Amino acid sequence: MFLNPQVPTQALPRVDHVQWQPLHPRYVREQQLVRGVVIVIIAIAWFVLMPWKGASALAIIPFYIVALIAGVALVLWPSVEVPRRGFALREHDMIYRHGVLFRKVTAVPFNRIQHVEVSNGPLDRRFGIGTLKLFTAGGSGGDLLVEGLPIELAEQLREHILGKAGVAIERD
Image (cartoon, rainbow, N blue to C red; front, side):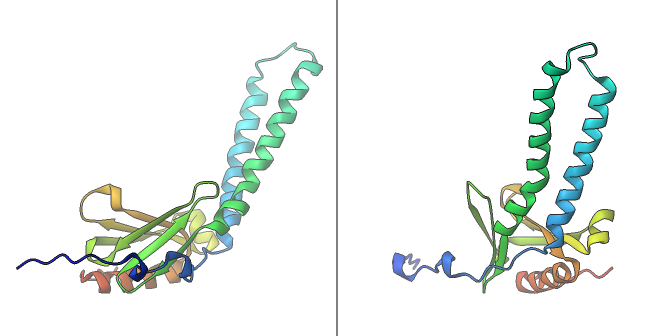
């Protein structure tokens, strides 16, 4: 006979008591570098194309001041946002939190994981960081992406999660 007893809310695990693991501090620098390069490329293109040729400097200066402030804010944003990200491994799942204004916590149960991948691009390798990707059964809605992990830790997490999920570990 199938039983489905009610679980009292007092018995639920508390997410606020989780020991969150931070992302690598170099991830902030990498994100700032990427944003800075993109902003410089856009600024150079803007100066080359300059739609206001012949306009007075007084009409253009406020635009450049606003653009400069926005550019600086975009470059500094990762130093605010990245420290608010974190992950934790628990007995039956991995949880990940992110967000500054709107906080989001995602839990991925190990028994739903079908594939785990570690990736890192050229800039990631330069900074010694990587991305852990968890692919779950049931579509992309339950997938999890954890960027900014030290590459050694990302590999260790991959093997641990694959072991917990009961998936054969593929070696390169």
